[in-house]
Amino acid sequence: MSTKILVVDDEKLIVKGLKFSLLQEGYEVDCAYDGAAALEMAKNTEYDLVLLDVMLPEYTGFEVCQMIREFSNMPIIMLTAKGDDMDKILGLDYGADDYITKPFNILEVKARIKAIIRRTRKAPAAAPEHAARITVKDLTIDCDSRRVNVAGREINLTAKEFDLLELLMSHPNKVYSREKLLDAVWGSHHHNPGDVRTVDVHVRRLREKLEENPGEPTYIHTKWGVGYYFQA
Image (cartoon, rainbow, N blue to C red; front, side, top):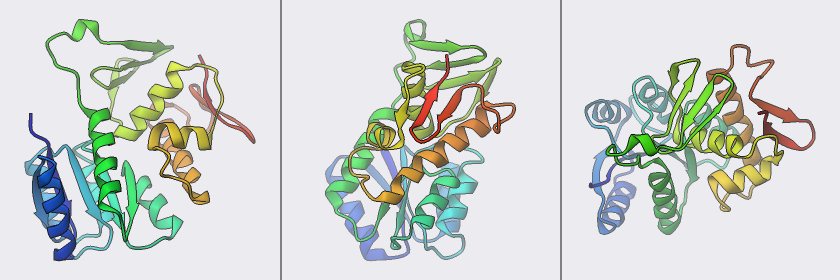
C-alpha cells in the first residue's frame, strides 16, 4: 500500500526539495502552493500525512488545518519559519499532530514522517476480533484499529492525541512528567523549554473530547507540580 503525502508551501524551491526527497523514500507526493488548493486536495484525497506551511496565500496553514479537522483526522505536521512558541501552540490547538521549525533538516523531516505514519497505520481488517482493547468506565480504546468510544459514541482523535491517551491508559495511575510524555509520544527531538506546553495542549484537547465536564476530569488528571496520570 503506497503512502500519499501532501506538501503545502508557497515557496516552490522548498516544495521541490521536499518532493524530491520524499519520492526517493518511495512516497507518492502531491503539492499545493496556497491554502485553498491544499484544502481542496485534502477533501478529494485521504492523505497519509500533510506537511503544511503556516504562512500561505488564500488561507493560512492554521485555517487549513482547522478546516481539514472538520472532516478528517489525517496526520498534519506544521512547518513554521518562526521560532515563536505561540505559533507552535496555535498549530497544535488547531489540530496539528506535530510541527517543524524552518530551516529544517530533511533527515529530521523524514524521521518525523516515518514515526507518525508507523503509529497511524491501521492493522489489517482481516482479524478485528484480536484487537487489543482497554476499557475504563465508559471509555474504550481499540489499540489496533485506533478507535475510541465514550459511552458507545465514537470520538475522533488526532494521531498524537491517540498516542498520548493510549500511553496513559496502558499505565493507569502512573504519573508522567510532561517531559516524559513529550519524549514518549513526540520523541527526543523536542528539547526546547516551551515544547512541554505541547503536552498541555493535547491533554486539554483530550479532556474536551472525552469529558462531560473538562474542568472536572474523570479520566486524565493533573498531579500538580509533577505531570499527568490516567485514573483507573
